[in-house]
Length: 334
Image (cartoon, rainbow, N blue to C red):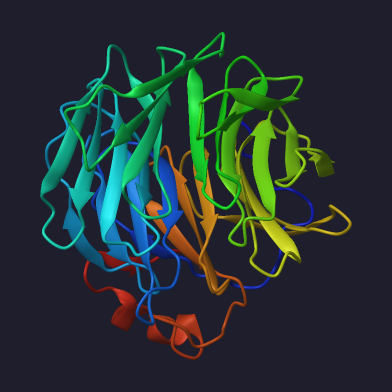
């Protein structure tokens, strides 16, 4: 593991907030869109207990109890009223985020690695070690799922892109595949040189952001051509584009550093250390004020895009109010 300090580490004092509660590595994070004036953060963890938090503060809201294996993916519906989780217990589950109750549990024949909800929250898509995609209708949960095959290895990520009526899937076979939702036929593909470790849709839906090997890709979601790729010196595990498209955050699967880059030039702007294990997942909030990182160390950390700004639990200078921040399972971290 690389632990030596990069030469261009930002010297300013940055205090992330630590969200505790998980007991094993945090492998996926997602912020909801802004709804009713606020937003939420959901986390997937190998402890099998996905958690919902208040987005701006990181305060714990609830834990979804019911999985019997590691949870690899957790995503919220557009209005944050439902969540869908993908698990090593061979199920994808849909949850009511107000009550924490399981609404649906869909059995698979192997580990489910990723799942996503349709824009209207009435269907889900899932993928995993079966190398098969499935679409389930929540209004007809007893009906057989629609299925699509084509991947040659484990599917690691799936996205429901309702604006374009397609599902995106990516995985260890080094391909992002595009499927027409109406007939579940493959209509496009994008190839990489290495297995794909993450894939998300930018907040505005313009870019598919993906990582493979040491490369970060920004793919135009309208034509599936590369708009930009940035080569790094480390194995990239996850990337998230700031809503204003001026910067992006990336995490590495073999070191402890959180890195911020200029989107236009691809230049590394800031480097921070806060985790005690590799970073598996990163995500910007919908307002761009903070970003979250999830790590092998079992914690989620929230970082300010503009350190020192009053926001959430950061009031004026974070260093001034460290003790006040240590509430509801959220603590400042040096």
